Amino acid sequence: MSRLAGRVALVTGGLRGIGQATVERLLHEGASVVVADLDESPDGALGQNSSYVRLDVGDEGQWQATVAAIQAQFGRLDILVANAGIGGTGPIREITLEDWHRTLRVNLDGVFLATKHCADLLAQSGRNHRGGASIINISSIMGLVALPGAGPYNASKGGVRLLTKSTALEFAASKLPIRVNSVHPGFVETPLLMATSDANALAFYTAGTPMGRMAQPSEIASAVAFLASDDASFMTGSEMVVDGGWTAQ
Amino acid sequence: MGGTLSGAVALVTGAGGGIGSATVAALIAGGAEVIATDIKAPPSGTLNLAQDVTDEAGWAELADIIRQRWGRLDCLVNNAGIATVSTIEDNDLGSWRRLMSVNVDSLLLSCKAMLSLLRESGKTRAGGASVVNLSSVGGIGGAPFMAAYCTSKGAVRLFSKSAALEFAALKYNIRVNSVHPGGIETAMMEDIVDAYVALGAAPDRATARAGVDAQHPLGRWGKPEEIASGIAYLCSTASSFMTGSELVIDGGFTAH
Image 1 (spheres, each protein chain N blue to C red):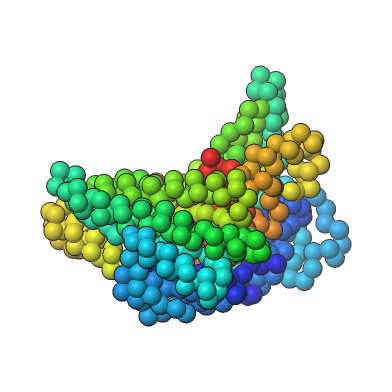
Image 2 (image 1 turned 60 degrees about the vertical axis):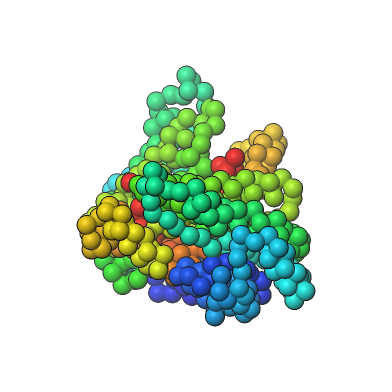
């Protein structure tokens, strides 16, 4: 499959979970992938046609450096997957402002900065494709519906949903060839979620999902790849909900 | 890795129309065998049949044909649909019922008739059998002079979610999703534009078309192929965790 042959993609939070599966999927479809993550990459673990850059998505200076490096190395960027995210839970009366800011900084500032600093390069590259360049922002079902005690996370992912739509409309109005869509995964068997969830939580995720199971990261990555490709050339400002039926209820 | 349509057996209704024929082509290109039906047999499928989707006996006959040749159904694309343009005041009950019959009753008849074949697929197919129902942006927001159409497409949207949840609860391994196109370059869409002009809702075709264009932030109508690719994605094993979802392919229509 070479639907994305010749394209350059940037995936934030690309070392683990949904990000890692997305990197693998984009590589499999022929793209070159820049893997950005806060964690250090083990040497040589990323495979052919991929490279690693250390990036704190909430740091504007690092974004400028990252985009300059991509410009220098590839001279183009066709696909941006803003995937980096962290949790953010706790009783609203007990969450500190610092906790709140920590979640919003990564999950929402990170998407804003990604969009802001990658847009010029994406717009240039997008002119070469029928479907334009593509930004895929990873929101969550928690950007559509809430859970008690998930205030910061809900707020950040809801913010991603509407930032996505606003950006999609702005770029369309400006005739920039960049489509912008959000992906809303349900509960996914990522290392982070599995490590931070007790048996009760895992039972809740599984039982609460109509399909009766959690998602594999690859099942989210396939949706990201679809949105990245020209197959989604008439999609912008849309939400791709991949949740095993959670929000259909 | 990946996701596939290879070897899938698919049924597409309304296969003579713009989105339907593009869907048949996309599924065949992906390696599926396609039973294509329309009120007059369309030309493009592996097997082409005439079908009135409002006729329950016809559905039973079609299921028998598929059962005898393939023994299962992997993908069911309920695409057949009609649109009317009318004020509510002038919308006669016969026309209303005709539209509901084609756009909504057909889903019940289709899912009932094909259920055992879909369940057969669900026993073995990775990612399960897939039902894709064509709704519209008119199933998410209303439109003037299209109350009947929007009512029917809203029904498609929630029938799909209910069916998704029911089949999940019953462990059938059958996914159900809806697709919501914006304005697409099809004969149906041209007819809608003509009807708007005939109704006096727009002074001429150019004005009516420009009005539709303006509702799409991408500044154009979609092509049937751009819907067919989304339908093909939902039909393929790549969308194995999607059920009860709405795939909105509308050039930004509903984002604002």
